[in-house]
Image: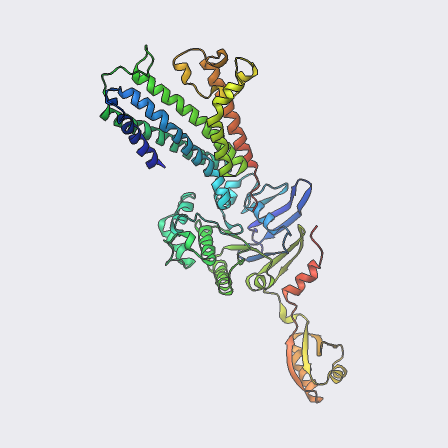
Length: 302
Length: 237
């Protein structure tokens, strides 16, 4: 992780008249990850993304993409970014292909082959010559991604990409985002308020609330083996289990022990030897949702 | 749009020729009538293009994708403005050429044109009046383009620009520069330069140089407002 982060958001604030939407936000997005940006509605996710891609001015601080300031070197900074901000709006009276051609013309050195390549990547070959008005939301989303990938950006920014997609569409989107980050090495920055989605999609998640960064947390690749985690034993006699294994506690009809992986089998053996029936052993994982609600609480929007 | 203009430019001289032995009229008279008539539509179309070019992107939501291309906002706006001007030049040339050739086919070249004042070549006169009409269109388009950028509403921008286009005569009447000295500095009193083709005296005793300076100043203000607003705008929702 010694690599230069793709995006550096440095002390960014956004004020509109007297309202401060973003408070002194500092965030580094490392290269090659799927980075989630999580927060309840109105937390400032979209505002931050709009500032990142230059749709909104930055009141204080600056954002650097690949080392170029969005404020002062906008053209160089944005050349490395592909983005969809909110809904993928296209020219409805043109075909998908014409739309891509139109965007390709606005960027240097994009060949016809590249257009075909991205069309294939998002799986739109069959319908690409149909008018965009005939597309479903999922197809428009794909076209949006195709548009964003045309110029081989280092960073792909997607604002609420799963909004309005059906479960299958969400799954496909997740799969090819993973594909993009694994195979093509693109850093993906996704915002969402759908926690379960982010859990499946992202390597790292930053949580924002009321315009302030609450937490940044790794979702994958921790050294889980050596960490003591709560393990739930589903047993018939809770009281006896508690006597046999000290340090455990009874909660919601299960017996919970804080322990490391190696000792789980041992505890099980002791329980069984003492005649306690063990029906199930589970790792108690606090889902992102629990963590998220814990962090953001029920604080209301300012 | 261009085909409607083309059809009208051919159609008007033909319709005029249906008048009782009108074919004896001069080519130049027919050309003048036809162009001044079709030019209204030409201006309206140019205004529509100017108004929709920026406001349309906002109402379709495509502005978000447009502004995240690797180009500065000034360049994007400039390209839109240039595209609008190219359209207006193309449509004006088309209308002039078609009107002229249709008139040439129908009308007589020997008759002395009644609409051209004496002492000036007919060709030169009609060409200059066309240029004057284009200047008028050019300023109206600049107004439409500014309104489109500021209000992001195509309808409002088209409506207001056309209102200005049709009422500037009334404006000149109410705020007559002969009555009020400050009215000399109103844009509306100087948009029609064609009067300078027949006289040296403009409204309120203005000279052509004065009128052109007024137009230039207003034009620069319109453009400055457009650019500043577009550059500063936060694109939300």
